[in-house]
Image (cartoon, rainbow, N blue to C red; front, side, top):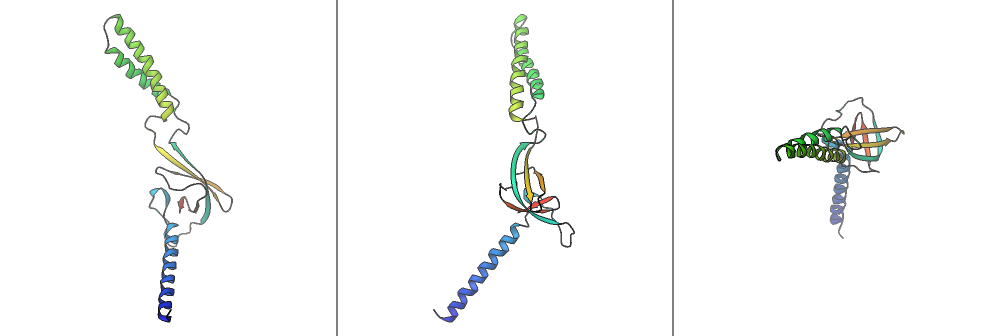
Length: 160
C-alpha cells in the first residue's frame, strides 16, 4: 500500500470516529418526552448522571384503574334510558329497571378495567442518580427509555 493511500485511510478513519463521537454527544442533549425546553449556556443548574430503574404506564389520576362509581352512574343512566324505549305499561317498568341494573353493572366493569372516564395516559420514569438519589419524572408521551438505560438529569429534565 502506498503512503498516500494509507494517509487517506487514516484520514477517513479519524473522520468516522469524530462523527461517531459527535452523534453520541448529541444523544445526551435530547430531552425525553418531546419537551423542547433545555438548559442554556451559562446555566447554573447542576447535572447528574443516572440509571433508569423503572418505567411505568398508567392513566393519570388512577394508577390501579377506576373505582367504578362514575361508570356505575353513567351506565345506569344510559341503561335506564334504553329500557324506557321498550314496551308500554308494566313491561316498560320492568325494561327500565332491567336497563338501569344491567347498564350500571356494565358501566362499573368498564370503568374498573379502563381507569377513570377521560383519564390521560402517563409514563413515570424512575431513576437512581449516581449520588444515590431516586427521582421520578412523568411524561404524557412515551419517553423511549428502558430499565438500565443511562440518562442525564439536568434540573427537572431527563436527557438521553
